[in-house]
Image (cartoon, rainbow, N blue to C red; front, side, top):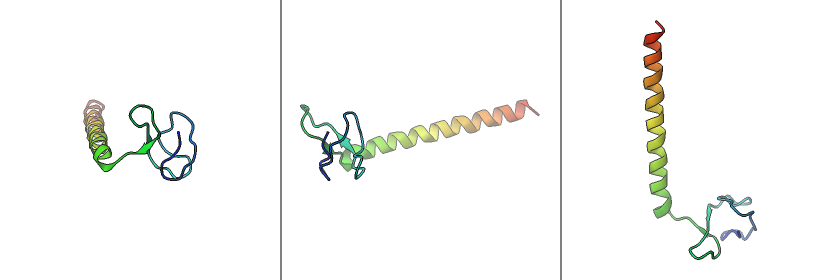
Length: 71
């Protein structure tokens, strides 16, 4: 997959360019790679942050429960 920003050839399946770290994704129809836009990345970022908050809350709750059991 060729990077649209710097033109570097990247191995198949890469999500970031090995040279400039531009995010890569295949274009519809198997065309050349195009960089992701903010419209695509922001919902993904929000979902990842929500998952992180949920996991952190579960870890804190389990730590609190174990702390009370081990006293």
